[in-house]
Amino acid sequence: MKILVVSDTHRKDDNLKLVLEEQKPLDMLIHLGDAEGSEHWIPEWAGEGCMMAMVMGNNDFFSRLERELEIAIGPHRALLTHGHYYGVSMGCEGLAEEARSRGCDIAMYGHTHRPFLSEMGGVTVLNPGSLSYPRQEGHRPSYMVITVEDDGTLHYDQRYL
Image 1 (cartoon, helix red, strand yellow):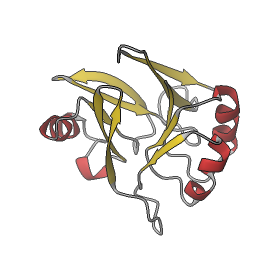
Image 2 (image 1 turned 135 degrees about the vertical axis):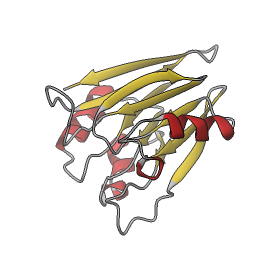
Image 3 (image 1 turned 135 degrees about the horizontal axis):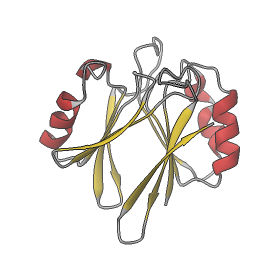
């Protein structure tokens, strides 16, 4: 199974479209918020048969997306959120604890526009960064590809444009 994880595209979608074309076929696309209206077109761009999981970000003012989702990824459970309600700009410990309390072993967030991948007390915490407005050193647009092996093993691959 191949999963594309993106966040903070802010309706500046050229890089998202480029990555989607490069990474197809996809089994799932996860968008961690601040699509700013593009959530209506992203499923079409991702292609038929691609499962979608999208959450609302702090700039998705008129969105009908959920604030958070819990999904299964193989034998794993993942908490998806934009992250601003968990203070991720100050650290991810609160988000990791929330995921753990819900029985999730993965927590995904956006909001900071900075790629992040770390194990925190049995929870894999990740942020794919931003495809539109990256804030990390070097300011390269980023995303993540997760590969799920048949035995449920996950491989996380942080990628940059």
